[in-house]
Amino acid sequence: MRDRNAPLTVGEIDALDWAGMDGLLPAVVQDAVTHQLLMLGYMSPDALRATLDSGRVTFFSRSKDRLWTKGESSGNYLNLDGVFVDCDGDALLVKAHPVGPTCHLGTTSCFGADGPAGVGWIARLAQIVHERAGSDPSESYTARLLGDGVGRIAQKIGEEGVEVALAGASGDREACIEETADLIYHLSVLMEARAFSWHDVAEVLRKRHES
Image (cartoon, rainbow, N blue to C red; front, side, top):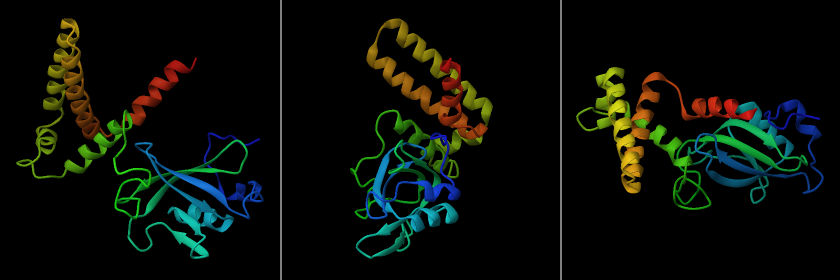
């Protein structure tokens, strides 16, 4: 039995259950960073093979009756992170890095106009920090802070950490939320400066609490 936590390889394509839907499998696409659900498409064996070979998510278009690479007209590609298979081998989870909006209506997701919600938005915050790193420091606090160096970023984290502690000690719920948001933002800037991510942090936490 294959490890369902491992991404699919080209050599495993033929072992999937292609008989149930006339040679097609539903493929749910998820943002590999924010985990937001982006779209649903269908893949044939050739579409799945093209996806794995090219690194760009490719579907079988039932309306066009041919393979269709997402973004081939718009440039809004889905760059592949990995394809995962469900327990029955008849549905696919595609993790990808979207280039531009996924929906033809111009939104991030086909399932709503809003971006990622909840903790998923913290990953989006990291993307925003990365995007602003190259901005004009006179117009971007993020770029200015990164330009000041890690010492200044660390100082701000220390200041915000104290503010969180004081808000927690006072029992002010709203102040706790606001100060925690400030702290998380400055931590995201440190992550950008030191080239690590929330995923790296989450992996450490997961491993600590697995046992």
